[in-house]
Image 1: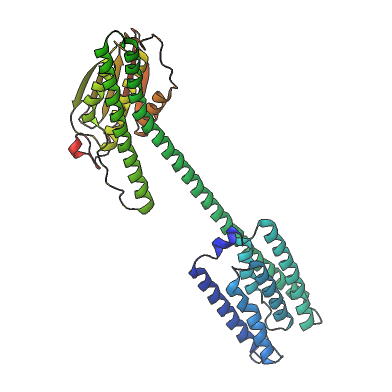
Image 2: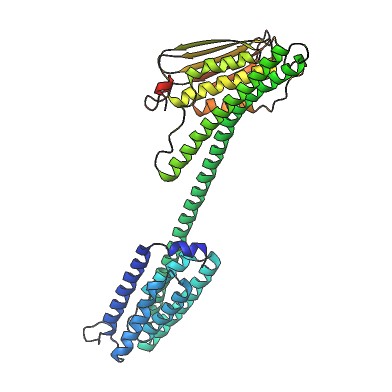
Amino acid sequence: MDKARRRLTTGPHLLALDVCAAAVVTAVYMALADQDGSDGLPGFSGPWWLGLLVAVWVGAPLAVRRLWPLPVLAVVLSASSAATLLDITRDPYVSTALAVYVVALGEPVRRASVALAVTLVVAAAVVITGEAAVTPSGPWPEAVATALFVWLLVGAAWSAGRLVRERRARAARTVRRLADEALAGERLRIARELHDIVSHSLSVIVVKASVADHVAGERPEETRDAIRTIERTGREALTEMRRALGMLRGESVGRRTGEPGPARTAPPPGLDDLPALVRRTEQAGVRTDLRTRTALGLPAGTALAVYRIVQEALTNVVKHAGDGASCRVTVTVGSRGDVCVEVVDDGAGKATVSGRAEPGGGHGLVGMRERVTMYGGTLAAGPRPGGGFAVSARLPPGPAHGPVAGRKEKAV
């Protein structure tokens, strides 16, 4: 049983619907077979048990039409043909149309088309033969009209089945596409978070390791200070990574279960964490001046975005401006909740102790731009005319509701 047919047979409501349809069709054919023609309706002159047998033959297989579409169509078509030839009814192909619908719905287009063609040919031949047997003088226009009606009925059922199949296929493709897009977006978000966490800490560690290697034999106290900075930065990076992974794990559980995920061990970083970020940057040898002007608190997501933008911009300063450079960080939160972030360095430092700039893949600016765009903001980044580099990001006012992360005790 293929996947399409399995989808059709899922759910007890479909089985109940088919059983009801089979019962109704069987009852109608029993009533038609019981007519003797005295009331002007088509009459059946054969034994009652034969009429009952044909009625059950026509209707009962419809109860399992979704399990075995093609065998049920063959049985119902032969039964409908027998009902026509026995003159139980002149229009016996409603049950055939019900079977054709499921064939069109569940079978591949080529197989369903062949089944339709065979059904139309057999039905037309039987209808015309039956009319000729009843009226040998031959009211052929009536026979042709009946055959055309049967064709229209069966063809409409087949078309409806194909239409429903196409709609279901489109819906399934849409669901898969949305799932793929959501997965890609989630991967991008995780990659961006991990990059922002790891890149800054590793840049500080690399700079301090270079310092320690350079002055190990001449200034042991400075070497020990660099090693302590490396250890402290590594621990902070591990803590922040655990926090980020805990947030992601909690969100993932919440999406799967529809319930809140596990409680986070710490709030996401925000504006109150900027001084610690600046201290780590200064430990890497970059003099940093932090200025914040906040008229009100920020939503947690916006505060995290501001923190990550500053973090990545300072990482670039450490990597490319290097030891001895000066940097100014300005974060301004307007009265309407709009945010302006500026990170400007003078480019006066050495990229590394050895004088070589650290290679970069350019993911930092891309990640910043993606993060700013996600919040509907704008980002400008480039060299300054007098030397150095400048990053400027503007974020529009965030939602008036939701968690606020202007201060840690307000963050969730």
